[in-house]
Image (tube, rainbow, N blue to C red; front, side, top):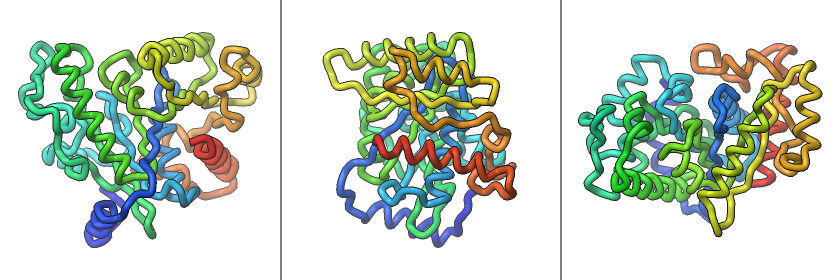
Length: 307
């Protein structure tokens, strides 16, 4: 299920609880209003490469939050049996938002009785730890779906407060928090963006890519009316040699060029197939993987320099 012994796992929990943070961790939400752009694979490879390759000493303790009912991020780190056990232990983002998930259905939404959820450590699982570097995850579940399709104003307000308190805990315990967010205007999107310092928007070659970015910018602006906006960054993703015109169009666009990262990610199965079964990108061997791994590291370094 993870890459460390029980003794090491206990030690990492002790370290998180006792090390005093000099400054709050930074929060990056990875999302796009348009689906199928690689937000989950970006989250997977960004986090595992950063921690696995020990790229930046300022960001040694990393938390990833699967905030999507499709739970693809969670599936990438656990086999079925291990994931099922996590849900039995109530280790999921649903436990943060709701008091008792057993009563949830698509027609009736339970309203949490308390504005305080469980301690963050009770819903996290360590997936990578080595020599002071740590990668933890808050898994997701398909049972989040009722929250995405229906919620009362009171329930939404309470869940937003519970999520905010979880992020406050995360900032105190981790250097970097990455949120893989549901691509919609739901409770998940609003709460993730509201708590973020930065928004990373992966875009892939598509005639409607600019429309998706515009929707993101408008949505964020409406949420932060009169307040400082989180910094927006556009990542050109899944770019092949045939996509130069698309990349150039975004890079020189007067609307988007200030957001576009100089580094980009290529079209590669090493990126798209990265998971616990196939291995993660940073673990890839052979000359064919050198450039792809270098591209990922360059993206990470460029973004973290802006954080």
